[in-house]
Length: 148
Image 1 (cartoon, rainbow, N blue to C red):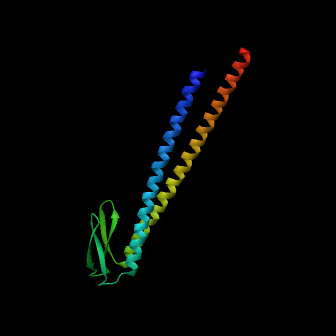
Image 2: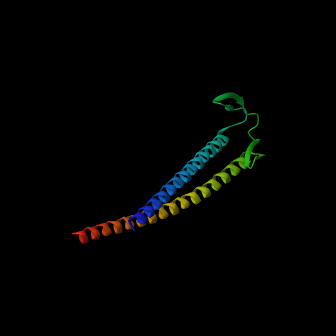
Image 3: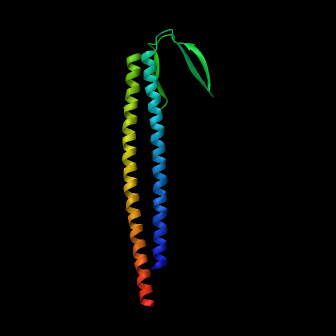
């Protein structure tokens, strides 16, 4: 029984470790979604503050920027997802971005529920492991008392 019990404990420990890794991956995804939400918030704020003829810094990539003048704030190109973009006026751009943020909120809520499920499953496995360890200890104590 002892060898089988040890193997079962090892399997439980491995399952717990896999769940912890899964939880970390989900938490990483949540962090990435929150960063995307921050970018959306910054874009909305910029749209609401900018005027035609405003000077802005446009990222070129690699940490390089160029100064540019906003030609017409009423023409904003917004990423719709799936490699599609559309030209919107200010209100339309803000509305589209807020809709994207709401979608991200829903995804974050789903992921948080997933984390809660993982935590519950982890607690269940840890509880089973503790019970198995206690049973093994009782078995060892009974064996020792019989040997005396």
